[in-house]
Length: 629
Image 1 (cartoon, rainbow, N blue to C red):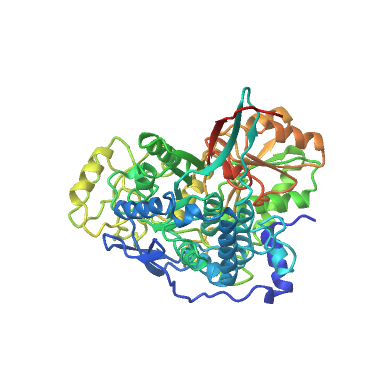
Image 2 (image 1 turned 30 degrees about the vertical axis):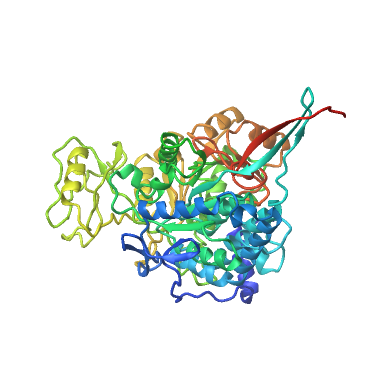
């Protein structure tokens, strides 16, 4: 019987808790600087930012805050490492593979440390970080299996191939071709590295996203300047230290943590104006790879085009349909749908957040899904029984809504006077990103965060006028955004089946939430929530289903549960999505490409297809005295 990765992990833990070594819940991060030229350095500005444990809100460390000046230094180091005749350029491809395997071995050695850092910084359960995230990121076994299956590690069965091990094997297999053209000529192609690659990774899977991007770039001989999410920099910085220990030459790998603070343009600030934007627009960066929201992906693409027309790979948002036909094994369908949505606290770009269920089994599916969701163990990420951790509490840009009213004003104490919106008015207006900083209110509402509604022009002008030298940040909890979406679902008429509220008084936990009777036009059915919120939509015909499944700007993934191969193939062939899972969900492998249709991205990561983004094809034609076959 198919069971979700989380439940299988929980069952395996109950049988063999000793299979996962204890996590380091109280460890102090060792690396908090910017990694350039194989050394950790302070930011040129001397500034730092706090990284927070989302399970308890406590500060884990103060991390160097990279900005444009640091990016410039890193790009110069990467450019030097890529020069003709450098140690890296002269290195045999097979030796690059040796270094990648060595890096994977070191990650295996430090697996407990890396999994602990991932849990502390990101909030995901330690058992999942150790058994799932690390498994795909490091050298475990050479054969391939599905990575979102931590149970198989606990039971000493093969998990998957490592990203680094997989691409280590590709390093010396990047073959060109000989082409028989007309005339006395010998023509061949060679695949050359692109050059300096800028990479911007998100906070939901820090180690995995780092591996997805570093692996193919280094295997093909590129150098890298990577911007890591400021919400979760710690595990990536530890891996940076391991690249030096593995033997990568100076300047080949450069890792820059950055912050949203101090930005001049708030839209650009969404991907780290002082670091991410600097990478995207840098004239000496040859390629940029970005994983994040569609909104910010557009900005990355624009910056790449307006600078030196650099190559671009984008892995963006999703609102994926997960389709349950009446002929499916309902127990398996419920398990699969639960896993497809609630894994990683719902913080997956490919989450099956639109669950389409055939009318004949709709009510029973909802009832069983409710029962399963309510069995989730929410709490301490280091408790091996925990299946759901907190949402990431990132410091995000503030949102202002234009109400056409007199603006609130920012005081000389750098506070924003707060207005309470009318009930359920959150989603009625168009939201605009602006440059503001918000304190929590200090009034009778006892420090509950609110939104300030200001005229956009006044807001920008006021922010510039009152900008503080210590660059305060907007503290906008992700959990509050999720709760706003839940409120919108209730307002639009969807039936709240379970959840819909925070869990506990400490940390940023949201109970698994299920909505029934969801209509296709509702906000919760159209916008990416990035949280544990399942929308269950009824369908009664194939024609209706295909139209609804494709009724989204996104096209990242889709799932289908059925015993009928004709139905499965029809959905697979008509759904506009980059990945379609049949009778499974969230099955990944280092060898299988991943990416989106429509506004879910450009290009592919993983597999042989993922190498194409990190190579240039050169055609060489030689005049010969006489050509013979």
